[in-house]
Image (tube, rainbow, N blue to C red; front, side, top):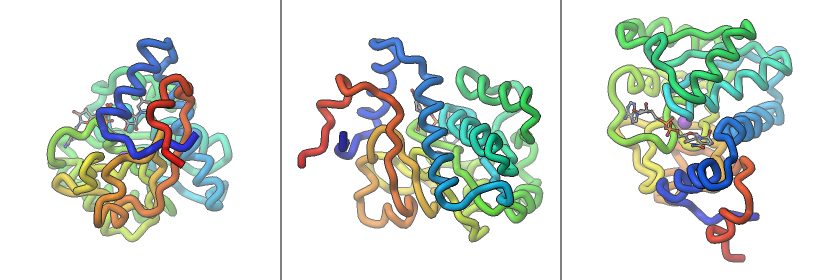
Length: 230
Ligand SMILES: NC(=O)C1=CN([C@@H]2O[C@H](COP(=O)(O)OP(=O)(O)OC[C@H]3O[C@@H](n4cnc5c(N)ncnc54)[C@H](O)[C@@H]3O)[C@@H](O)[C@H]2O)[C@@H](O)CC1
Ligand SMILES: [K+]
């Protein structure tokens, strides 16, 4: 079913209703989101000889990144995950993903506030990768990007590496398509449920790159009001 462009509030409402009214676990939606994004990377030729760096924020967008890591690892891809959070700060579904990766022996590390002056280490990790997955911020963006996430976004934008953004480029306002402080300039964006309203704003495609929608298993009964007119 084709979905019309969604506001931030609409897409967050759909996720919430699937969980609260239908009892669909948010981990299931997250799994579908991350698996769909990983499948796209595989279609681009990402495989055992590819190194993928996955930059995760502390929220559910970061959790999606954890899922991408697990699915790529299962295909033999060399993945490395960096969580932009204080050690022990992750909660909910993102913490679940962290724990699974940890027990799976997948390489991951924290980039804590105190690492702000250590941007060279981040530059090196980016330089050593063939692809970067941007899982820093999704629809939870509420204020201009600053601090370590600003440092990270600036670093990946200047790297020239191909970037896949999850749900939306980190720092992009989902409704206006404007950068809030700074935003990732992606080669492609795997957006979940439906395109975001801001993607059609002038200049937004400079940030999103090619947009493809990943269907994450929200049932039709919730999606019907948002069906695109044909
Ligand atoms: N809720 C659900 O059921 C699903 C959510 N999904 C993913 O979850 C995302 C939304 O997750 P969240 O609501 O956890 O939000 P995000 O993961 O987008 O971000 C939340 C975190 O970012 C922080 N933050 C917000 N603005 C910031 C700024 N300017 N600078 C630094 N930190 C900032 C918040 O304090 C919070 O810790 C979606 O975009 C999508 O990727 C998917 O997993 C599908 C299912
Ligand atoms: K993102």
